[in-house]
Amino acid sequence: MDRLEPCPDSPNCVSSQEQREGHAIPPLRFSDAPEVAWGRLQEVIEGMARTKILTTTPNYLHAEFKIAVFGFVDDVECVLEPESGTIQIRSASRVGHSDLGVNRRRVEKIRAAFEHGS
Image (cartoon, rainbow, N blue to C red):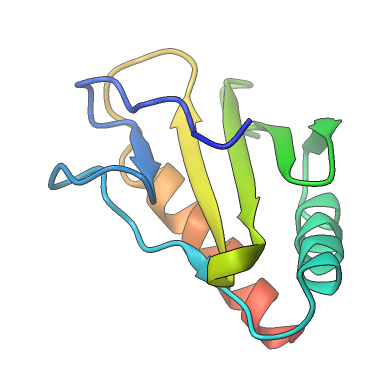
């Protein structure tokens, strides 16, 4: 898989492969070896509360994040692009319309931990 699922029209999704305002977010960037960066990303996600990695391949990751208060489940997908030194990322709510910025904050939390570990 080399392309993330597009965001729906509802404001509860962000993706680094989106151009639409409100959905667009920068990808993760790395300068170390792709396999090192990919391993670091997996460690970051595994270390987050109420998270379960469902699928991982050499270039694709899908994880579930369970929201503590209401028990909703959000999905995070990542695609490694070794040639450009980037990891595309998408975070989206499975249900509802607005997420009150939860998905954008989650990606930024992942980004901060990912960059701190580099």
